[in-house]
Image 1 (cartoon, rainbow, N blue to C red):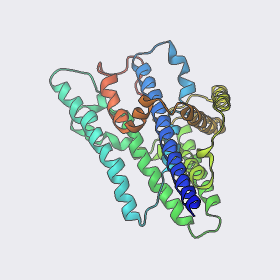
Image 2: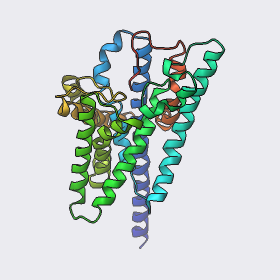
Image 3: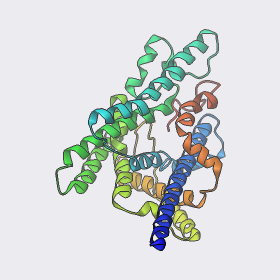
Image 4: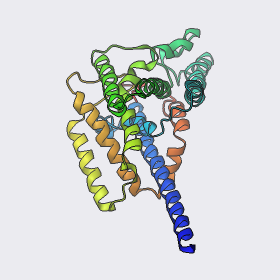
Length: 318
């Protein structure tokens, strides 16, 4: 009897350790992806020779966040509770950081004679409504919060509509691919939807992928040799370097005939980041970046672009 009790205790201990390890390496994955985004924005405003890597990193640094968001999808007990949760965690931060750094601060600085932290569309009372078109305001990275909100809403609808079908999983995947294809085509033809809805449509397949691997597979708990993980990650990154056409997820702009390459780049790169994250799970600074992604995402631009508009581009794609 004592052996059985000890066995149960050990099982629970190992379960708790695995849970902790999984959360830590996901934080590290978020931290790595956030660093790539910050570096990209730095290179956008202060271009260096490393800009040659931009097409490669553009393939997966944003999809990583959509995939990881899908891991934590939960429909709650009602749509009302679900909506309240997403408004509190996504819309309220979006409103705060948008108004602070894309409306109030740029206009205040312009009034006192400083022209940094702004784009032309950020000036005047009408700048409050720039978020409607989904791009072109000073603190552009917050677009991700608004797009992610719509993804959660759309995906909730997919799960709810299909919940009574015995083929629910298949229908969820097919519906997500269909909506993603719609977003991709819209972007390919340079059609913009309001409130970053086009960005959300394009990213739904990534979100669905995260949801499926969490709910239906054990991929997140794989425990293989570190050298093998490094080798697989390098192969995945090499494939991304071969096929990624260069992608603008903020602008939702994609080459018309590169559908497979776009999504394959996102998924291959995300897998590569997750594998590297497992290897680097002791790097505390990356854990910090991963835990503080919201703050870093929403406050990086006032630090990066103090001199005003980008000297060689008209936007700052994420």
